[in-house]
Length: 111
Length: 116
Image (cartoon, rainbow over all chains, first blue to last red; front, side, top):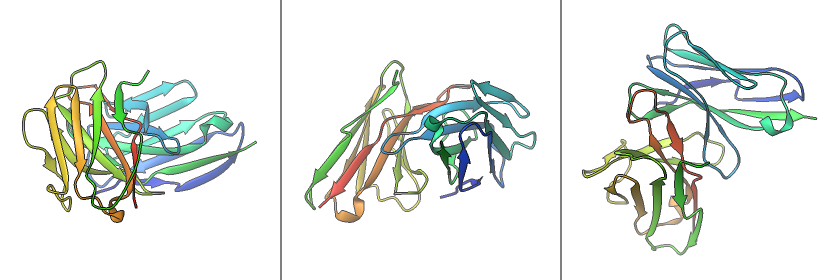
């Protein structure tokens, strides 16, 4: 099935640094979602975006819905060790419709 | 707290056994639930859409007779892996929600299935 292109694939950063990752698609989505997955667990919703151009924050996390509706980015400010995990973007075309997931970005934080 | 509950969290069984996994929405009604499969170091791949009161919709390449889905109530969907074999070993995750505008999908904690 289709997957969204997510970059970078992995990143190894120092504690306290800011992190940026993005997600691109060849087709339009009406909703963009960002999830974090820890090993052996299901994804946990971080931020949901419903409108093109929307910029939304959740604590140290900020995400934006691209104006073309074909991309989104997620920023994490002042990273801490518990930010370690895999981050997935997901696009949705309408309410009740299935999600298309990105390939994932693995974040590792060095103390 | 969790809004989607999945059970069991881990199953180990012999080849040829059928395994049932439950997915429950805890504080909302879900006419639609989704079942995903995830292999190590890979993303989630949608297997099927579970529809309350009607047949599930399977993604291309997913055997409907192998992966039986029953969505008998507005809060429960089950996935049964029939006659499981080692190649069926994987991490299975369900999600619910997203049925209305501005209502995101939430995921269960997943079920680790290991077939010996």
